[in-house]
Figure (tube, rainbow, N blue to C red):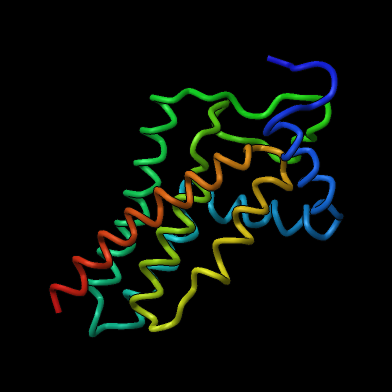
Length: 172
């Protein structure tokens, strides 16, 4: 439903964030990140590459990769229950297509955070600060999520990723 008039609440926050963050370069980067993260495919592929390269921990990489897809699936389940529509206001420009009209939580934020948490454990490097904020910002730049959508997605991805990572640590 198209809202009219001055944006308020989260729409106003989203419009301001998009106005502040949007540039030709940021939109191009955000679109690339959107395609990479679609259905968690890029993160899953990176996990499979990890499994192919790190033969000693192949099973852990495969479990982590499945965890990323599982986190994505969890976000889809929540989306179907919550049924929050994507932003639709004249002050917000939608700059990329989406596979559904549902917004909460952001599946890109969920799978990216799960991947960052899980792959951090396998690489020995904290990937969260490098991967999560850019993906969250990209969803706002593209105008396809409210701020709470990306925050909830990151929380869900962190929860799923953290639980699976803890399980991997217990099974050396």
